[in-house]
Amino acid sequence: MNIPNSKTVGYLGPEGSFSHEFALGQFPEAKLRPVDAGDFVELVRKVTNGEVDYAVIPIFNSNGSYIEVALNALGSFLGKVAVHGCFPHEVVHNLVVNDDFQMLKEIRTKFEVYAQCKQWLSQWADVKRVNCTSTSAALLDVTGATGSERKWLGAICNRFATEFYGGKIKYSGIQDPKNFTLFGVISSDDSDQEGEQVLVCITNPDRERIISTRKAFEDGGYRFTHGTLETAFPPGVPGWIEFSRTSSAVSLNSLLKATGCSFLGSFRQSCSISAFFTQIFDDLVIDEKGSQA
Image (cartoon, rainbow, N blue to C red; front, side, top):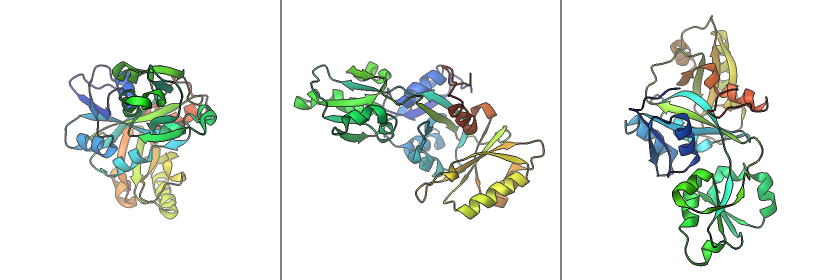
């Protein structure tokens, strides 16, 4: 996906986050803008009100975890934003400490990161864990600490964040094997609905509606490829279903109206959620740009 250098791309800040790292690698010519609120709703809102042209938002990690707060944020703005593609990004975690570090007593990072470092964390079962709004915010906490705290705090974050906030890497590559995060690229332009893949959303889904929606799309010439609905989410978390458009596909708008679904995105098959899952189960062969190799 190409984004002109005249366009702005928002990401969950502060600077140095994995979202920043992904955006910089994927769109090196675009103008990048951090949203420091630590809130995906605020990030998506800035897309809808035109403060940024695009935004990158993490939706799934290869350890099997959906980013529910991101799904909720997108679900809060149905009909106002569209997903233009999904791209994998390799995530390498490190424990970063201060120069005067002595002993690890407390780890700070984003909540989802702990599940991505289970093997390494198993040796630190007695160490306190504190949740932060982002990995870069965790490092800011650590390097900004004063007094004795500086000697026993550690942040799990990327190497990129240390370029902004300092700190030294005490343990590198502590993530579980083959750790990738799938990022969606969104904008307020939903006019392109003719891609090979179609992504639709059901709010507050139940099993009966899931089954009827899939049947309606399949009868209408769309092939089911992936669905977050098969994972048990807490009440209120919207579910996504991804379909491939076939040569016999009927009008998408007619199906959306018949099923009560919301359009969430349309894109090439190579930029789909299902392609990412195929890579996971095929040893995750992904090149440096996040493309299938």
